Length: 91
Image 1 (tube, rainbow, N blue to C red):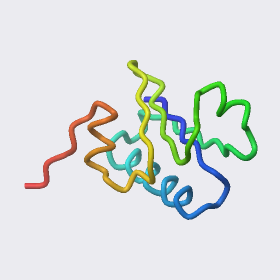
Image 2: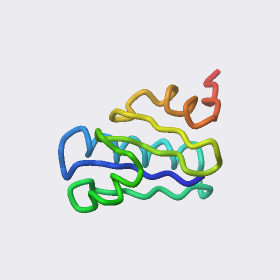
Image 3: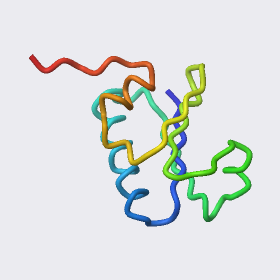
Image 4: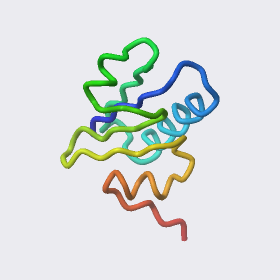
């Protein structure tokens, strides 16, 4: 899975989104993911090319279809559903 997370510097929601994205990837995708962190303040051209207008925004680039998740990614179940994965059941 190839993901790109757009953040805005060290804003609290950006810091939270980085921590949440990393935790979700480590817990659910192990070694089968690539997570790019892109700071919109340092790479506005790349953000414009991806159509980013708000941060934090997580893009799922691969596998297709492309998905876009906006927010600090604190709702793990919703993030997993948007990424096309079912959350693990904790029986």
